[in-house]
Image 1: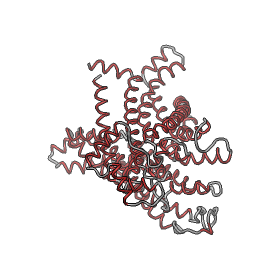
Image 2 (image 1 turned 90 degrees about the horizontal axis):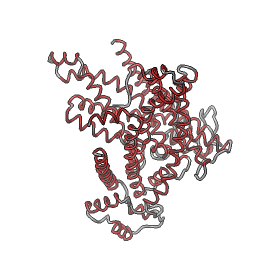
Image 3 (image 1 turned 180 degrees about the vertical axis):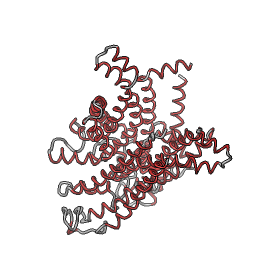
Image 4 (image 1 turned 30 degrees about the horizontal axis):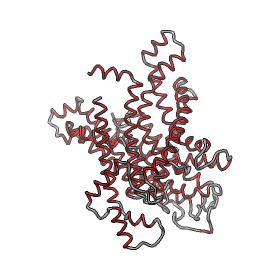
Amino acid sequence: MKHVIRRILELIIFLMFLSFVSFSFIKMAPGDPAMSMMKTDEVAVTDEQLNQLREELGFNEPIYVQYWKWMQGFFRFDFGNSYMTKQPVGEELLERLPATLELTIASLFIMVVVAFPLGSLAAIYRNTLLDEASRLFALLGASVPSFWLGLIFIHLFAVELNLFPSMGMGSWEHLFLPSLTLGLAMAAVYVRILRSSLLNSFGQEFIRAAKARGLSRPRVFFHHAFRHSLLPVITIFGVSLGSLLGGTVIIEVLFAYPGIGKLVVDAIMKRDYPIIQGYIFLMGILIMLINLAVDASYHLVHPELRIREVKQR
Amino acid sequence: MKRRRLRRKSIVVIWLCLVLGFIAATYLAPHDPLSIDPTNRLQPVTLEHMFGTDHLGRDVLSRILHGAKTTVGTSILVILIVLSIGVPIGIIAGGIGGVVDRVFMRITDAFMAFPDFIVAIVLSGLLGPGMVNLMMAIILVKWTSYARLVRSTVIEEKGKNYILIAELNGVPPLVILFKHLFPHVIGNVLVLGTLDIGKVILMIASLSYIGLGAQPPAPEWGAMLNEGRAYFQLAPHLMVVPGLAIVLVVLATNLLGDRLRDYYDVKTGGS
């Protein structure tokens, strides 16, 4: 309980910090937001109009009043309207969020489908050709930029073979190439982690004990070795979920996939600050939630931690 | 010990070769990477243009060679800056300990919570896209893992007998630092730095591809892929050449880093 309260307090402090940082960056940023707002209409801007807009947006008020108002909006997830679409930023982001989540989940699925069998086989048949292949796969995965892999896939599957659409979203076919690109890049990391973690478990006493008890080999593997080996995988997974959020940005732009990543890159190009603000807030929250979830999942996978905590009390 | 020292020297030599190689590359370029020649656009591989030309008739080979300076040179520079920030901070935190160390750990925890890609995107969102902002973002994220590695090395070595003996003999702390601790620190840091170069190259190329890094017409490998994308069907070399350049360089640094890691038995990850 104490732990939970501390976490929530941390979250609030963190959000305050985030609101302060993004506010001060906006104030320091080059260019006049009122100007860029007007410019999107593609007509000549008069000084009078500019001043009127600045007054409307509250830019003429003292800086601390601006910050106070800004922070209030921040905590209500209200960042004003996008300069590009004139829609409220919160709505715009939440509208795009499902697409990004879809892509993330599909990529994770492909990652698991590729990495778990390959990593397990590499550990079981250690130092065979298969193990070498997994090593090569991991090395290439760490060296090939995901966007280039994506470009090759587009060229191969969409342009030459015409099997899958190269952009947009809507059906599973649209999801296939982006998530394959992202999933393969991730799988390369996990194959090696799972392999070394499994090898580590194989050498442990409890595996020998399980074998001595006459349990079948699949049971020893799945029930004992595999479960035990998942902890490091989950640890790294928690850390890399954040970078997965970054990875989706590249892939979304590459495949013109209408998720949050594409939205924010477009916003950056057009200096659409409200969208960027909303993105920062959303990412901050997401990263905090991910960290919480990773913490919680340790306890699920690793009963020792629970026992240790009980003992400490 | 002698062999170890020799190995350490050989890393420095390899590093110097890398840096010199990329500086030399710009002088080897047969053409001006920026000169436009509309009559020669999208040329396939010929003797005159060994990697063909792009949609504006620019020589791809020259752009690749100059791009090495942008992509690889920048990532080496980034790592060097990161080292010059992270190493002293790590030495201070590990050497002094106590409150300073606790504050340090808290700060690095906060920095490490943020994925580097997101920070880079957010910074270029707030400051505008460009190479300098991209570099700043990477430095902001990366210094923590070096500081942590150095800190844990210093703490580990500090407890060992040879340092105690040196202290008892009245060797001044600064001498202990530079003569005894520094060699351990440098080995570990060079390994991590070599492994990170590839990651930084990938990041710069990826973010330049989506337009948040190097801006056209600057020759940068990721940006070249972006510019050439519309012409891949007509001129596949625009896709193959810059991509292979990235893959080969990153592959080389990864292999080098892996070897070094195995040799020194360094635990990367920074904690």
